[in-house]
Image (cartoon, rainbow over all chains, first blue to last red; front, top):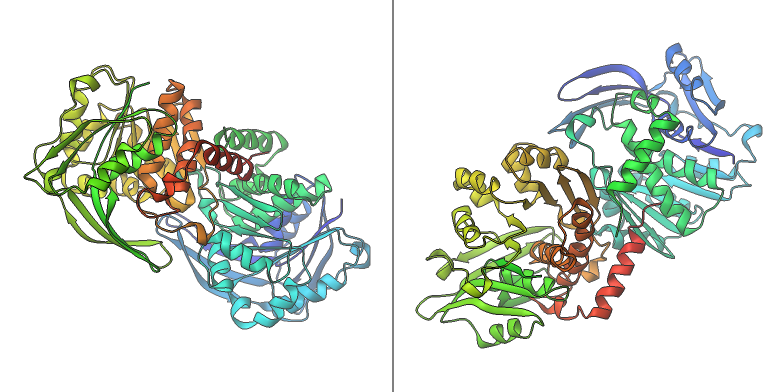
Length: 304
Length: 304
């Protein structure tokens, strides 16, 4: 059903209390695509530099249903690179460095073969870039944007304009609090609805997520993962969005119930991501493994 | 089905960012009983002093199905009193004072008319006192204990002995981390199972709760309350336990599925408690209001 994602493709260096991985595949669009592909085909729009490792390309190309015709290589540029370190049992993340590289240059464009895309996810980047991408997707049935504290702080007006143009916003609880001045996730979501979107998904990491929609509210716990299951939380939020949008596009509906169901699929796909570095955890997400994890989650989160 | 609760009856003074109430009815057993009574009759065991206000007694006597024959008055003593203040949008609670009064003297005893009780909740107090009460309830089908950081720190051995004697433990996520050294709620719960109980309920406040049971794991979000709905969080945890035990006793079963369903009822009853000071929120929990709130929560937390 023509799901498209725009976002970063990055080279990540990640340190956890027990391990370290240098220059592995990362970036919001990579995690999103790897989480959505098991559910529905994904069109990817992004840019990489001449230094992008061949094995990273091979990994994305290996994703069943990923269409990389929107992945632009700029040979003279450098790929977005990020370094982070987890402290205190994965609860606190410190960013060690961010090298924007080509992500700091002219934004990618949507190739004409993707222009008919109906299900649109605007990964986290400057809201003006997100708005520019949106205008290239006139056939969209639903557009959801991600954002982060940086843009709330330095591009507030542009973000507000974006919120008048998208159907939904996905963000962390701390970002929702920053944007609205309200710590309560439901009330913060309601405030954001007043800025324009039909719904907001507030992600709470290990505590699950809340959907605040014009038509109602939904809450979902995180997958009840044990300590051993959490190898590297990097990309869990992007994978949540990927699973969520993958379900929406697969079903081909955008009503409240579909969005609520989509929270479950986001949760399930994110639970694979945290199980390994880079896309390693998602690599294990075979159809059987996904069905099994989904059944486990349904059972654990069943409401009488 | 003969649910019995032992715990404190207190005189609370509570300050929130927007209001203050002095010397209102509080205490773990009061909140527990008020939350459980709409589901099943409750037998209450506790002690108060000569200073206990008549209106507090009237409020407990007004609870339909509350049996106060285990409530002992010690005319020469003072009632347990607690003062607390909430900061940062209700997220941080500061204890201003704790006057143990009669709670620091000889523990209450279980009256002979309550000795046949089958469903036992041992509210938070010194684990030696909890053990002493447990021996007075030989017909118990299930016994669940609450505890707190104080006892984990100063009565660790007695708490470990208690954990070998009860079926379940209820505690906060921070207390579970303190007891086990593990921050992950599921893994912390698993560690506690190794100390003896069949299951552990880890309460996460606004983030819901996790049940870690020998037979499986269950997770439930909190009721997605808006900021306006949270007047005073005091007693939410005790009310959660009351709703949970109320359901267990009403159903008359102690299997995993019943415990999982009980999390929902704990969540529903706690959502009333936060809506007012003292027992005011729970006073609104009429059968119709409970059914409505339960349906709202089922709908919001529905899993596809």
